[in-house]
Image (cartoon, rainbow, N blue to C red; front, side):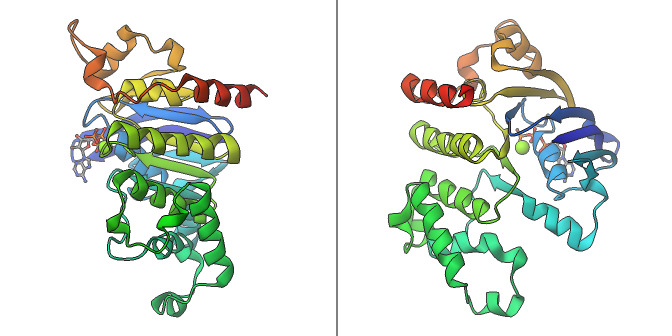
Length: 272
Ligand SMILES: Nc1ncnc2c1ncn2[C@@H]1O[C@H](COP(=O)(O)OP(=O)(O)OP(=O)(O)O)[C@@H](O)[C@H]1O
Ligand SMILES: [Mg+2]
């Protein structure tokens, strides 16, 4: 359970995030949408403690993660893995080693320096790569992979941490529609099959509608919409994006090809 309570982040005199509150109960797939500069990244970065909040609290199972210091703060960062638009892999390093870096926060510095990975960790990394459909890429350099494959490596690295929460900041913004679909499907699997909470900043409406249980719309640092995809009408979207009557949904579309059979199968699992 995640409770964000009146969280604010000032940059100078300007609030990037302005008194944001919401509660997520259980392993939901939450999408955060809004135009550029709305405060989406700042909000995620505060949850992960990459950015300090100016005020407010973020309670995870009742504990304020914003108040954690030192080793406790780092332990929390291990519990909420972050995925970025630009993958943030080590390009010249092989895929398995990139994934193994997900265990760094619980490894001794010397062992890491000499790349002495425990055998159990290597096997687990290979298992995760296999699960995400990229096991055959394991020995390649990360830079040799397609964008969609690289983002799946980043997700595999996140899974090595066995995180409670996955925070994804525009995970498909650099991908073509086919790769975007593979990556979003992967995040959905992790959400549905593992029961991990996923919170993703998404720059397109159609993706948020299709994959999220809940959509939070931000504008100028504040939440202006919080509801299900069904409730996200064109009017609500217009309000979030601050667009005029000429607002066209196609302008914020990733055009992921429809796969209604797969969507229905997942919906069935969720209901089962
Ligand atoms: N380190 C910083 N220093 C000063 N201002 C910042 C900093 N980081 C963010 N901001 C400002 O805070 C506001 C929110 O930025 P943020 O990156 O959270 O928006 P965003 O919704 O993620 O936008 P985008 O869709 O472009 O990624 C913007 O006005 C931005 O200029
Ligand atoms: Mg951003």
